[in-house]
Amino acid sequence: TGECVCPSNAPQRFDLDDGTAICCANNATLLDGQCHALVCTGGPTSYNCYLNGKLCGTNCDSTGNCSQGICYPDKCNSDEPFSLSPSIRTVRYGCKKEINNNTTCYRWGKTGSYTCFKNDTLCMTMNPSLEQTEGVCDSEICTNIKPSASIIYKNSAHAVAPLGLCNFGDGLVCVPKDNYTTWDCSKNGYHCGSGCSDPLNCGTCSTTSCPKEGMEYNSLTKRCENETTGVYCTVKDGYYYQECYNKGGEVCELVTTDGVVTLGSCTEIDCPEGFKYGFVKGEAGGGTDEEGYYGCVNEDTNIGCFYHRSATPAACYYNGQRCGQKCDYNGTNCGLVNLPQCADEGKCTGNGDNITKTGCICMGDISVDKTTGDEYCCGIGQEYYGGGCIVPP
Image 1 (tube, helix red, strand yellow):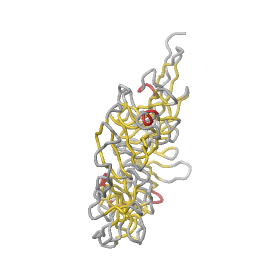
Image 2: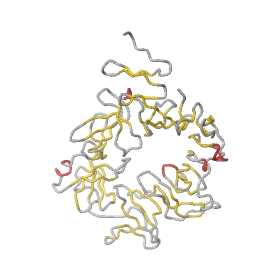
Image 3: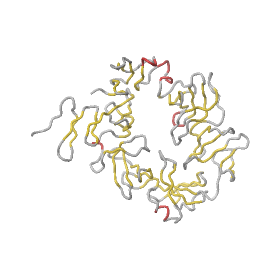
Image 4: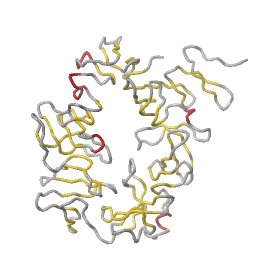
């Protein structure tokens, strides 16, 4: 009887719909009626936070209050329960909204836009008023324009992952936008029209051209080719990107269908001392699942860097794993360090580096694993626990 008071070791109170309450520790959150440990890594000012090993927020403080994503159920409205979303997004937890026809949408906070899935397949985005902004989930949107049309799932210009688009046949693929009032289209994979009211009569989609300078479209091979250099570009399994290959058939760069290079380089780079122009193994992200592009590589240190439009000058890799971003082409002067090999002067990253094994210099707080005796480097105010850095309760 009386008011429920949470104990000092579990001061967080979560009130349930049935009038009861559950108390959780400071470094925990409520999910499916149970307290789950919230682990935040990084720091000392910006953290990534995880629930059950799945990312729930980025650019967070040490307790899981995030500018991108959510880690607490009270961040959702009562009619949009805190739920695990399909795995297409990096941030996995969101506020769930049931729409119709097996379509479920999620947003990452009480306000903001929705990302929608049909049968767990990403198909469109919606604004906070539940109006479509891009993509399509219902095939009737396509067949009402052309009965033989169908939905395919490919990357559009601004999507973080493939969305639903209308395939009208004969190489014409279009994505509806702005509550289905405008369309962006591609012909044989090449961007040919934007902001069209009629997708069947859009821009220059009656012809096909190559956006990358110096290339011509080969109707037999269905790709853009440069006869002088031997470089050719093909449409990636998507709507907005082309992958380009050197004359040896190795992928060397990723190009938007507007002709902008976003990853790698098919043109030889003047690499720093100890590095040479060649293939750099490493998952790039940003619209691709390829395992690398051409850049500068050091075969002795196993560090390689290639141009990354979102992390200029370059993203760098150590043995194929992301080492640093916004780095010079020799893996130094990185704006963001992911592995000690790209930390200048042997500094740790602060993400749970094993100091005992790597010998890196910790600029944050050092924790000792009581089982192994190894020292780990975490952000200021954090401790190493359970394979990651957390804020102690």
